[in-house]
Image (cartoon, rainbow, N blue to C red; front, side, top):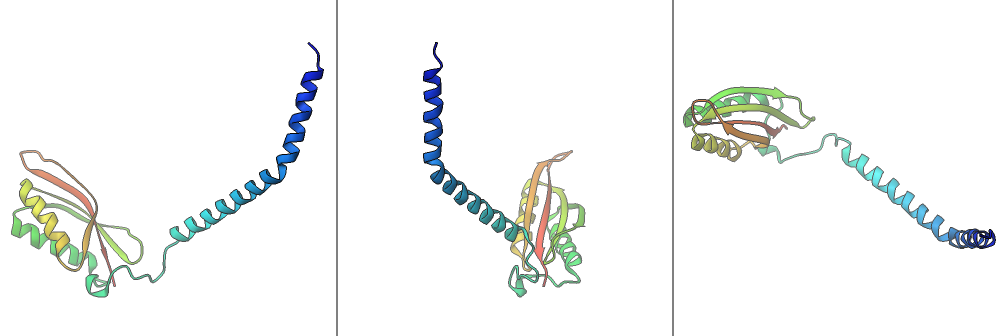
Length: 151
């Protein structure tokens, strides 16, 4: 086999690469700009907004008493609904928010009604995550994290 066809192929490839170089460089430049814009947008989104208003002030808890107010609300609703509060523990949350971990158990209907009542009352509280599982001796257990805003 002769080397001449291989050399012609290599030469044609080099000429084609040289002809396409301006468009390739332009496309790579546009791609680099798009990646930089995406990275700056993600960084701006991830940065905490200092002093940002999360909800209207009348829907937020007072800054000093938020965990105690959340505990009082949950215990009041649980006592009225016949649900056992197993644990309420404050957990760290970003600046304008307050979060508590919750574990309650009781009859399924009562636990679901309690979860609904917690989210319906004011100031606002929402379940960030939750899980319902069967409890020993019948009934269900709800585990979740409640999230609220502070003024």
